[in-house]
Each structure stands twice: as structure tokens, then as C-alpha cells.
Figure 1 (tube, rainbow, N blue to C red):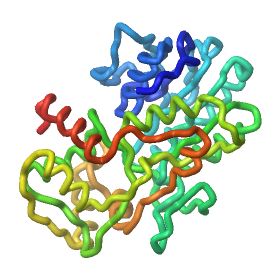
Figure 2 (cartoon, rainbow, N blue to C red):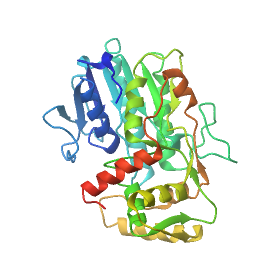
Figure 3 (tube, rainbow, N blue to C red):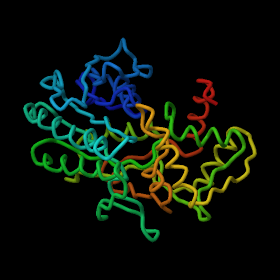
Figure 4 (cartoon, helix red, strand yellow):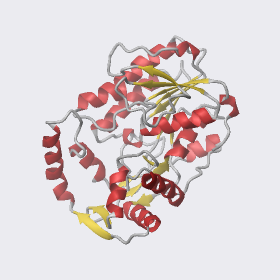
Length: 335
């Protein structure tokens, strides 16, 4: 991990600190010498947080009148909280957009104190690549799901504060690494000898290993030689799901057979999961919104502007990142 000496002794606030990305960010901020303030709910699972090393603040961001404590002491704010799954459109927009407005209004009161704010968005806010053209910061925003549209709405709110708050928006693609629970199901299938392929044509995507992402978030707090405010951040490569499956299979020393699912069966499967979710407080594991995502042929983005402006180079290749991830899954007895 790179040293970020300017962070030593500074106060950093992280929303969504107990989540996959947020918890890794907390670890890296602690390693950089920060005093880390974690925004979590009273009901949050805190298994990934070093409780003795951080300051916990229990705040329900779902409460429209929430107040962030100790903002007057913060040097840096990292807004990682968000929903990637929800039961309906309103839930996505409530957390991924409305919360941003409330948070940044409160930050305004201490704008002179706060040196940097990182707004974690997503490639989904822009939408998939069309006709093989990799998206970049100049691409038109065309989100295709409730999640993507809510992340775009969050960006639109951040945009209103660009001139008065030191906000930078980062758009990662699929993020993988230890503690990640969604891609884990894909790797579990590989372990059992199956390489899942949706449809008859390869689907391409950008990736970033979680340690590289949080390091990019930290570096983005520093000064940029340009006045850019929005960046894509990936590992700079493009992958097919077949390549990811082969790399994982090689690491686990298993042989796989392709399990090809025709796209036509995705909708009935999604509807079944949605019906089952009616009887649960949790959103469906797979629904028609997720179906729209995985039917796209390409989710690829260029990180060249971020690499140029911050001199950033990802540390982890796919092979190295998968090795660490799969080792962690084994250590935790997930695989």
C-alpha cells in the first residue's frame, strides 16, 4: 500500500463503513494514520470493522432528518453508503440520491474545514458500452436500471455542490476482493466445476480489485493538476466472464464445463425470485433489474484520465487479485 503522509493525524469520516468497500477503506485509512469515524446503523453487522481502532457513530441514513456528528472536526469525507439491491425504485433513490443532498447540505456548514469529499458512484450511472465503444467521462449518461438511475441522481446532486465543496466523483465498475458476497456465488460455481455463461455471445466488463479502488479513493483526496471532478477508475483492462472463470479455476486447480443459460429464461427466473422475496424483508437475490444488467454485452470504461491526473497505477492484476480473494474465501471457509 502506498503511503499517504498528508493523511496522518487527519480526521476522516466514512459512510457505509461496515460494507464491502467501506470496510476496506477504513482499514487503509487507519494504516495511513487517520482518525477514522465510521457511520453505521445500530443494526449494522460490524464484523469487518476494527472496533477498538475507530470511532463509531450510529446514524440511520434512511431517516430523512439524520444528522452526521462531528462534521466540524472532519478533514475528509468518503461517501460510500448506498444500495446495490432494493425492493423497489423508491428505495434506490431514497438512499442513493436523497441521502447525498442531506449529507452535502450538512457539509456546507464546515466547507472551509473539509479538504476533500469522495462521492462513490458507479459505472452503472453512465450505462453499458454500446457497439464496442468503451465509455469515458465524455460519454452521455444513459443508465438502464433503477440502481444506475439512482446513482446518476446522486451524481447530479453532487454536481450542484462542485463549486462550493471539494467533491470528486469516482465511478468504479465491478469491484471484487475479500468480503465481497455477490461475485462469491460465481466463484462457488467455478469451484463446483461450472463456468456460467449467459447467452450465446461473450460479455465483456471492466474490473477493479478492492484494495486498488480504496487506494484510488484516498489519492483522489489529494490535489489534481487539473480541475476534473468526475473519474472512472478500473484496473485498465477488459475481461470476459470466461476469462475470469478460467483464471479462478486455475487458481483453485479445478476443471470446469461451460454452463450456458439462454437469455430467454432469465425473466421467469427473476420473477420467481421476486415472488419469493415478497415474504422476506430482504430484496430478491436476482430480479428483473439485475437481469437487464447481465444481458448487456459490455460494461467497460476507460480510467485513463484518473491514471493521468493522479499518476495512479493499479497494484493488482486479475491473477493476483483473484489469488488473494480466493485465498480469503478459503480461510473464511466460504469455499
